[in-house]
Amino acid sequence: MCMRSAETHTASLCTGIMQAGEFCYDTGSAAKGTSMSAAFWSEQVVIVTGGAGFLGRHVLDELRAQSARRIIVPRRAEYDLREQEAVERLFADHPDATMVIHLAANVGGIGINREHPGLFFYENLMMGALMLEYARRAGVDKFVGIGTVCSYPKFAPVPFKEEDLWDGYPEETNAPYGLAKKMLLVQSQAYRQEYGYNAIHLLPVNLYGPHDKFDLQSSHVIPAVIRKMVDAQESGAPQVTLFGDGSPTREFLFVRDAAKGIVLAAEHYNSAEPVNLGSAFEISIRDLVQIIAEEVGFTGDLHWDTSKPNGQPRRKLDVSRAQREFGFVSQTDFRAGLRETIRWYRAERSPASIS
Ligand SMILES: NC(=O)c1ccc[n+]([C@@H]2O[C@H](COP(=O)([O-])OP(=O)(O)OC[C@H]3O[C@@H](n4cnc5c(N)ncnc54)[C@H](OP(=O)(O)O)[C@@H]3O)[C@@H](O)[C@H]2O)c1
Image (cartoon, rainbow, N blue to C red; front, side, top):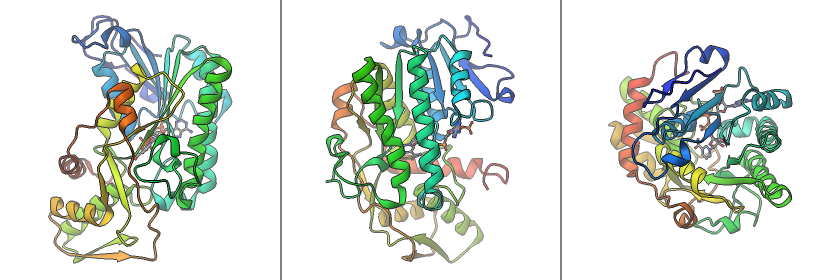
């Protein structure tokens, strides 16, 4: 249950909800600021699956900044979204929901994707299929599906354009995850065609920023490298080992920018075609590692373990559709974003939060 307060101008965390497996923010009807979006968001009751995760926290911040009327975050402990019964119950518990932003997923870096291709395929497919189907049945106005750059073909022409999404099989290490998420796009387009349902699909590139996962087993490249470098610097270790040969390129989007893009699209984009969310800044893993070493202050040796896979050779998105359709342009300078992420990691890590 979510307690509401019409007086509050600042969204506040509803009490006692975390223990019940759900939490929500309620801004009541008091719209904040003079944003053009105020009228739209003051009407929105938004279910944000995965809202307690890395990206989810930032999406919640953005929704609060827009004074969304109510935000519901179904936690896995109470609503296991792989289960039909739980998804049905979620919509029955919140019959006034007007929008779903579906972020919940089982995600991780190359290592965990290779270890659990079956799990990643099944869980992501089930969560997406059930959430969209029951949102439609419940009459929720809009469904915002969050896909991934991992859905692109391994050798898509660079920069990746949305129209090239189906021109080949994804890179093997993350194909089951990428394809499971891609089925949500198929489902969205099919539902728009058959039922006139307003489901959209966004394709964020690799994200980074505060609240990322820094455990070495499941983390993505940026948090993994930051953690290795900080640990090595503090312990005085002479060398850090990195996976692959450093040649692949990647594009990274600061997580707050991604959240802004998602909320912009949630308000303004209502079409069948998928949309990339990126920064249009491509960098090799080798150069990325160099920048992190400089920012961390690690001066030891770098050892590239070439027995580990490189992953996709190049990744860079064409970001023109997002700019054209809903005015999204990423704002954060890459080095500044990395610096903030490193600062956050140093400040936040503790034996309890980092395993
Ligand atoms: N991180 C990236 O670089 C990146 C890049 C492109 C796209 N994306 C997409 O962005 C979305 C968010 O990613 P993220 O990095 O923020 O992931 P994350 O931090 O791992 O968060 C995932 C969230 O999903 C929820 N979840 C997982 N399994 C669930 C289940 N069975 N039932 C209910 N909830 C479940 C978790 O909820 P609890 O907290 O309750 O356990 C968690 O909060 C994903 O859809 C991902 O594919 C991420």
